[in-house]
Length: 623
Image: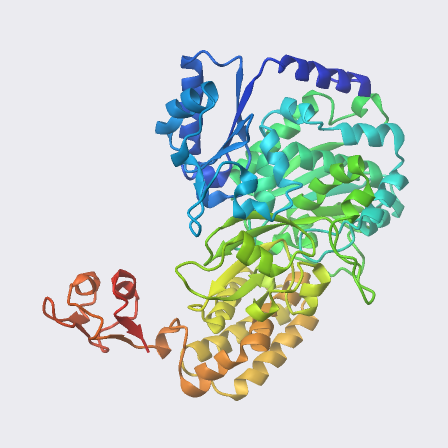
């Protein structure tokens, strides 16, 4: 395809591509995201492609390798249109049946349908599956329509029409006002009003300005931005172009962590394709607007998710934050006005332009007592001890309970849900009695947590909340850049105290000291990551203080997690002497005769938990 020199040429190309696809009667959409690739989706794709060729269906059936469909644990997943037939756990060996029975004959393969583990009912389409039923998939649903490596797919689906509208009929000031009216807030953590950033940057003096897409997603268990960038990079690019037009920038960067090779690859392909069509570069679509994008790879430092540290990294410097007494909208990359938003924020922009600010603002919360409210939808990475894990997109204001129980299906193995941790290492842990709280920037902040980038880890009754605080403090200690003393030493001291408590050395007076230190770090650390680092401690002390007290006063970990405070024993009434635990114990701590109750030697036991996980009769007790 040659360079597009006008808006009319873009629309002509779109119409031409749609006409070329009129003969396509069936589309087979196979997830090619990282999660499904780990389940051999590439082999499935190759097998289906070979079978389509063998049946000479290449011209009538389109095989589309898409981005993430969300339900990662069911991968590889496949959707067949017409009919919206949803297949899961597809293997390469299923290719013949899929093509012959479903594509050619229109018959359903029952064993490939999703089966609800609770009701036992099968679901033929996505909307019948509980995981999808309560979602509002505005961004993620677009992954299903395009091959991320095909700009043609994106154009056919209406891509770059928002950019064309902006360049032909909307001034930069009007774009910013539309974003402001929509109520769009940054999806990367703090929920800062997007339009305010754009407005400050546009008003900043100077002709050299930048826009940056922050794809340095460092939270453990979070992969929302990765999947959007992998699955629909042109959507993110179009959002950045509109933002660049609004603020007056000519250069942009996508800063993506190097641990996301597929996102890096797809981003580069998208940039090259957009350049080839003249959608990036000088005088885009024959207008006066010139803009280009480069890909910058991060080295895996958690702190580079912070805006000033990220910009230092792009400049080739050590990724350390700096004081923000002057906003980066005025003094950012190379000390020039810079607008930085994360992947999900940029991905929302084209839809707002096409559908209007009132459409976006109709979803979400209104806010109260001076709060701004939270508009639109939010993508969450639902993980932990829960039945249904994967990417979830819900309207802002949706209760946590809906996500955990209606979408997530509740805890696994018949356990009770105990808490949910939102917002990654910088977020907080909320108990079940707070699950009626709305997913809202301000509501969760008041509760001692945050939405953050969207991580949501579900914990059951076998989770020790003191150990959870210790885990996140350990992570944050490793990832602290060490530039400011409150973060560098404060996290160390907090971790020391929490470790004392989990190891049975805790003292009652440490709880007040721990809370005071956490509060001090939150108020005095240099950057936002340091200021939020104490949240796991503060939230667990606020809602689960009795667990800390039991560790200190009773020397007990009732969740059976902290090794120094637990002892393994075998219930003789439940043990039938099968010997499985004896054979599994590598320390020789278990003795007993066949068909006789076994015994654990507490002196030899290393509390590894292998015996407990191997026992099918629940005879291994933790006391």
